[in-house]
Amino acid sequence: MEINLCMGCMREKKQPGPCPHCGFEEAVYEPSPHHLPPETVLNGKYIIGRVLGEGGFGITYLGWDINLELKVAIKEYYPNGFVTRQFTGSGNTVTILSGYRTEYFNKGLEKFVDEARRLAKFWGLPGIVAVKDYFPQNSTAYIVMEFVEGKTLKTLLRENNGYIPAAQVFDMMRPVMESLETVHEAGLIHRDISPDNIMVDVKGRVKLLDFGAARSFITDSEKSLSVMLKPGYAPEEQYRSRGKQGPWTDVYSLCATMYRAITGEVPLESLDRMAEDTIKRPSELGIVIDSHQEDALMKGMAVFQKDRYASIEELRIALFTKPEPEPAAIENKIWPETNVAPQTWAAPTNQTPIVQSATVPSKRNIWDEAYGHNEALREEYIKSSEPKTKKESMLHKAAEMVEQSGQKLGRKNLWDEIYGSKNGS
Ligand SMILES: Nc1ncnc2c1ncn2[C@@H]1O[C@H](COP(=O)(O)OP(=O)(O)O)[C@@H](O)[C@H]1O
Ligand SMILES: [Mg+2]
Image 1: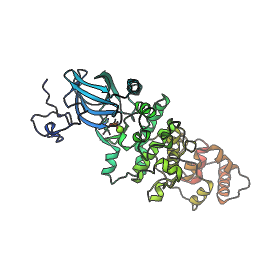
Image 2 (image 1 turned 180 degrees about the vertical axis):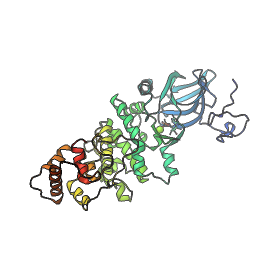
Image 3 (image 1 turned 90 degrees about the vertical axis):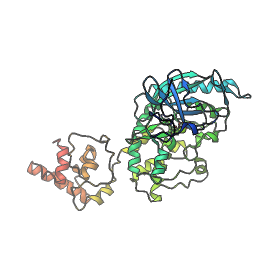
Image 4 (image 1 turned 90 degrees about the horizontal axis):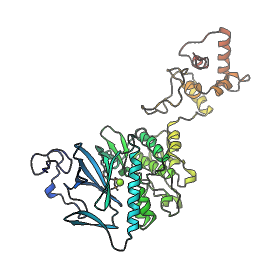
């Protein structure tokens, strides 16, 4: 087969020498001896290109789907340190190093396959890289994934002086949270969320890579735990052989990743935080961040599981639900009278308003924001027969005025806003 694709980017290349698109030059490319060489054909339908990355238990290659003529990413189960590769005439077989038991390798392989099968069922989830195919070969196995055209969050941060505005980070990560909730419901935990396992595509959409069922097996068995963990992103329970892991483990890593993206700093390692927690809140580092979102972020990064959100759903709700302002805070903001909504917190644009009511006027003011949707509280203020505060007395007066005149006040008037929503008009 004549291959005229660049093995560095899988685009067509007419001439030998460096690729005009990406500069990759196969003649000078030196893969590690245990990597599959470029142009290797797998399963009769995929061409292996350059190595995209290598972790403790797998090698990820750029690939080409010959039939569909499509770029893919192919992950090979290759628990480094357990195995070696024999380049024989018949193939690139992976063999287990002497001294290591075949059963460990096989168990990891089983997990790898199981993870591929489970992930494949989440096809279409926006925040997770899609699994397209799986096949065994070379005494190991391969997972074929959609190729995400973009860069890792780690690279993106490097190019952005190390950090991204907080509101943008939360907004960007929301689809990942929603997708993770679905994945967690099916009993799959990522266990290694970090900036280098997050791809940001050319449109700014974010996808999680590198689910680690196989990793859990290896960490549980032979390899030193700490070698596999990313300092700053792994919660304390991952350092303990009996640490109870679950969705809250991903809550920690996800928040640590967002913390890194918001502040430009890798969070302190969880083990150090256990001894003495000197972690700084983003605002203490001079970062502009909504205070309730900051609270949610820091709770997601609580050192101990008991203080953390138990699920991504809890974290997402805390991050994106605006809390009821304290009455005292309203008191301060409302006087002198204003009809302009305070811009304390901008909901991400792709988000459905948290409280939606047909009766809520579009021109919102503080009351509408704070109490417009809270029937009980509104009633309480309106019915208050003995107003204690200025706010209460004004509300009371407004109630009387409406009752006497039998009609509503001006459209933009504060009281109109209150009664307009109350009367359902
Ligand atoms: N589906 C994909 N599309 C594009 N690039 C990918 C894809 N999967 C992995 N990569 C690249 O390969 C690197 C390593 O892949 P990853 O799955 O994280 O494995 P590991 O961390 O075990 O090496 C990633 O950081 C990313 O740069
Ligand atoms: Mg990775």
